[in-house]
Amino acid sequence: EYCHNPLHGSSQKYHIPKNATVLFPFVLMQRIVTIFKDPDEFKPERWESADKKCRDACFTFSIGPRICPGQSLATATIYSTISRLLATYKFSVEKEGKLDNLFTLKYAGARLTPSRA
Image (tube, rainbow, N blue to C red; front, top):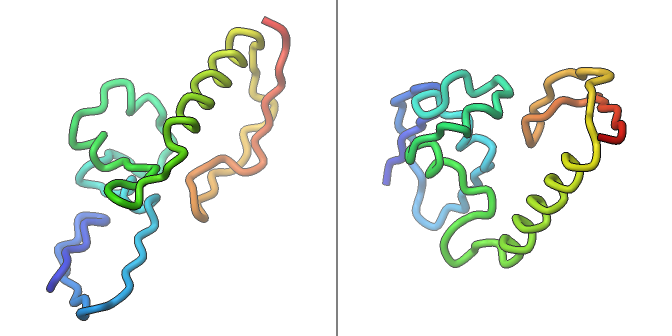
């Protein structure tokens, strides 16, 4: 079978031998230029009006029979923690940091200063 490489709009084909082990870093799925405009830039606002194609390209907890069993707990914890932090504190950026993209796209060395809201 042949597989297309969608990263950076490439149409190059790759041969995947039968019984090959294929690993796919999920961060690459969110870097496809045909789906995400400026994928190397940190733009959280892109999710405010994300279309179906954009949402379908993001499956952080995997899909199918290997889906993360802790997905519901993780999602609930994130929502409750973030909402409580934002309701209790006001954050200001002390240091922006540098954009780092090893396994996840993040600002390394960034520092926020909290103060009571």
